[in-house]
Length: 66
Image (tube, rainbow, N blue to C red; front, top):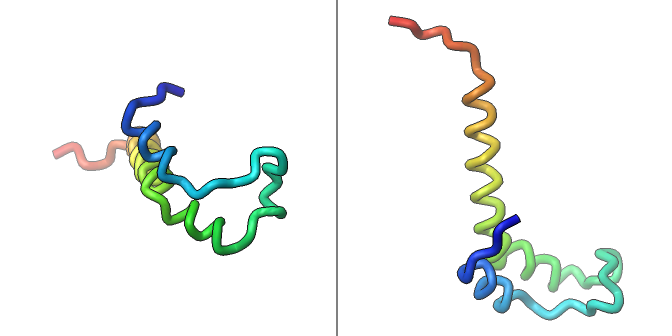
């Protein structure tokens, strides 16, 4: 996956998570909420949503041939 400078900046704004214990079960709920609402993950969700929408559009049958 290609990383842009914008991604790097967004990633720098994420709350700190213990890299020795990257297990999601060890991260408290408040940090998970901050991560989910961070600009980094919001941008990743937006891009994923756009990609899925494109894929589904490509798979739709062409029915409106006017």
